[in-house]
Length: 288
Ligand SMILES: Cc1cc2nc3c(=O)[nH]c(=O)nc-3n(C[C@H](O)[C@H](O)[C@H](O)COP(=O)(O)OP(=O)(O)OC[C@H]3O[C@@H](n4cnc5c(N)ncnc54)[C@H](O)[C@@H]3O)c2cc1C
Image (tube, rainbow, N blue to C red; front, side, top):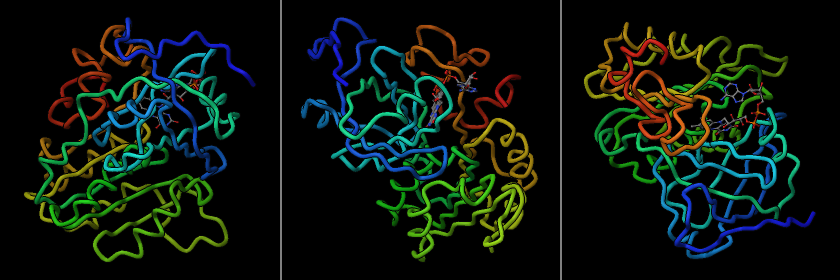
C-alpha cells in the first residue's frame, strides 16, 4: 500500500502533535492476541536522539486512522531500535496487527515524566508483579536492571496470565529462568493439560516472598482489578507506600498534558505518570 501522507519531517516542528516518521522493522506474534514490533526511525538523527526511561510510552500514529499510546518494552540501553508489545483490540491496534514489516508509522515521544525510578531502587531487592499485558512496560525495567545487575539485590518477577497460551515474552521468561540472579514465577488462571506450573491469581504468590521489606521495592502493572488485591497483599507485609510503584493506564489522547482526558483527580497520567508511587495516589479515589 502506498501512503500519501503530507508529513512534516523537519526537526523544528511547528506542532508538538506532528509525529516523526518511523518504520516497523520486525513483527513477531508472541501470543494469539499480541505482537511484538521492532521500530526504527526513518531519520538516523531521530533514532540516535531517541532516549527513553523504563516505564515511558510513545504515541503511535497509524496514518489516516489515528494514534494511541503504547509502553516501550525494550531495553533503554538498546539504541538500534525500540519495541512495543501490542494487543489486537480495536482500531489502531487492529490496523497495526494487519501491517507488514517495512510499514511506515508515526511516533511522538517518549512521554511520561513518571517512570520506574530505577535510581531510587538501587541497592534494594525488587519484586515485579505483572498481570497479562502489564508485563510489557515492566520488561523495559527488567532489562535495564539486568544490564546493571550489580546495582540491585534480589530480583523476582511474579507474572499471572489467563492461560498458558496467553503468556507473553516466553523466550525472555525462559532466559530469565536460566539465570541464577533473577527468579520468575508464572501462574495461570486456567491451566491446560501440559501446564505444570502455578495455578491461580498472581496475588497468592506474594505472601511467599520473604525479602526484608525495609530494603525492597515493589513494582506493579496489570489490569485495573489486579491493583486493589496486590496492594492489600503488599500492605499486609508492611511495604512502605513510597516503595511501591504502579504503572496506570487511562484513556489518553494527547499524551502531553493538554487535553485532560487521562486525569485522575489532580493528576494527569500522561505527564505526572504513567508510573506513580502508591504514596502519590493512595488518596485519589478513582486511581485504583
Ligand atoms: C500509558 C499507556 C500505555 C499503554 N501501553 C500499551 C501497550 O504497551 N500495549 C497495548 O496493547 N496497549 C497499550 N495501551 C492501550 C492502548 O493505548 C489503546 O488503548 C489500545 O491499543 C486500544 O486502542 P485502539 O485504537 O486499538 O482501540 P479503540 O478502537 O479505541 O477501542 C477498542 C475497544 O477497546 C476499548 N478500549 C480502548 N482503550 C482502552 C483502555 N485504555 N482501557 C479500557 N478499554 C479500552 C474501547 O472502549 C473499545 O471497546 C496503553 C495505554 C496507555 C494509556
